[in-house]
Image (tube, rainbow, N blue to C red; front, side):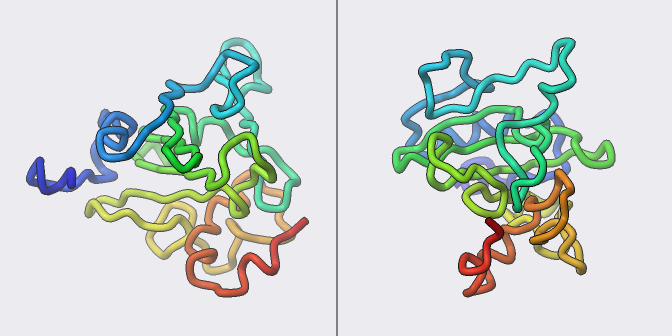
Length: 181
């Protein structure tokens, strides 16, 4: 719809684009979480993790695929909102990988207040590539693709483990039967 209205797609190579604002225009948003909530009673949005003088705040409230490490908050810190079915949408739209622009959309399919809150289990990441295509992270050509499954491994303790599981979750019919505990 954006491409039809504007004559060109949103591209991952564009810096300074407000992806959250664009997406909210086209989705049935029930709550704009800004960049995170500061109210402890609000469980539909993740807490706002300010980076000010606290290195622990660089970690997010989500864990990697097998729960052995927290993921960097910087991958989901450019805005969030809840859509009408309760899914939480998290945005990253700046130079997070190799100082090149990136547009990531992460979806917590059952919302923040329901567990397991792990990438590759209930949180899945997509990337808008330089051609304007929405691609499941872990697909060839995305920033978290690996032939060796290093970004979707039952054993890796890397904080990036799970970021590349979306493509596998969409293509492997047994994916959800074999989730790590």
